[in-house]
Amino acid sequence: MIDKGNAQVSDIQNTLTAKKSTWTSYDTQWVLSLFGTAVGAGILFLPINLGIGGMVPLIIMAILAYPMTYLAHRGFTRFVLSSRRPDADFTDVVVEHFGPAAGQGISLLYFLSIFPVLLIYGVGLTNTVDSFMVNQADMASMPRAWLSGVLVAGLIAIMLAGEKAMLRAFSIMVYPLVAILLFLSIYLMPSWHVPEFIIPSLPSLTSTLWLATPVVIFSFSHVAALSSFAHAQRRHYGKEATSKSEDIVRRTSIMLIVFVMLFVISCILTLSPDQLAQAKEQNVSVLSYLANATDNPFIATLGPIVAFIAITSSFIGHFLGARESLIGMLTKSTSLSQRHAHGICILVLFLSIWAVSIINPSILGMMEALSGPVIAMILFIMPMIAVYKVKSLHIYKGKLSTFFVLATGAVAVSALVFKLVQ
Image (cartoon, rainbow, N blue to C red):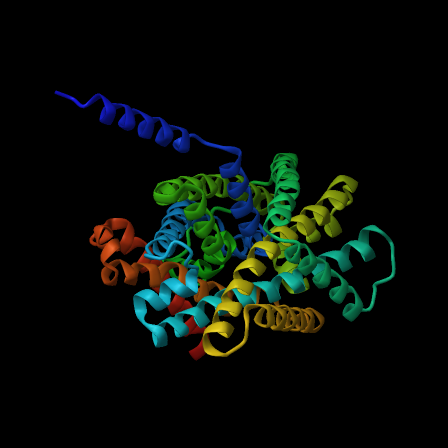
């Protein structure tokens, strides 16, 4: 005979689970936050990198982009949620699973996967605003040191306002960003030209795809926000955090691929390979180049605005990860308090981003040579190694997705090694 009391408790638990499983505005906010973290300088420079290589590599990368993005970010989120501690961040998880020494090394690598991205965004934002002032607003160019200092300080100020202000800022920025990116992609369609469909030789195709992989990984990466994201899901959903996180990551990945690849293809079919090469040489985003190269006042106005919003939203998400990582390393390796470590972290990040923004190095060069491969180590390789080391992750051993993510990461890292010895 069934115990009525137990049956009632079971019904209540099932009802609560059903309520938790429904999609909420909280989940939507996190999709927008993760989307905003990914949509930054990388995506605005992705048409330049893929367009120069021709249509065949572009088609192949468009097909691979979704599994590369979703499977890798799902694996990283699973790794963060595998900790026995409910309040563990990424640094705590790697120390728990790999030991203090290896944990500190991996934490440093995690920081190095995010830190160059912030430098890239500082350069990209300064160049975008400067290009807009000179080419669209007919203003004199401001001293670069002053312009970059004000912009970087303003972005960091948003971060210091706290998580609620950050999520609100993402919500405000990402909605118009998605709408304008979609509108621009469609608006450019009448300007499309039939591309030369040249089938490259196998060695040439292999080389192009190999060296393009780090840029694609960088362009769709939102790993910087995943540790804070996973921690927030555990706090909000408890035991259901893993399934909820995977659902949010999946929807974010689909949203990214649909909007971004449409935008990338639209830009590539609008500009010639020579124009894309000029954009690379000028060290500006594809939207800034479109604004400067066309006489269309609509694109001239919207292009820099989209670039500014995209870089700003992504900067905030990556700063969140860099700050968390650096504070964790400082407090674990020194006697500094959380408050003092936070102050030092903010000062170091501000000064370094500001300095590189003044120097103005090649953005695509930084993506290809450092950011993409280092992100691959921490996002693609490390979580897959953990699948074979961490008992709670052993259920994913032998999965095709595990081998795919590991192989993709190895390809990106080998591209870094190739550039270093070239």
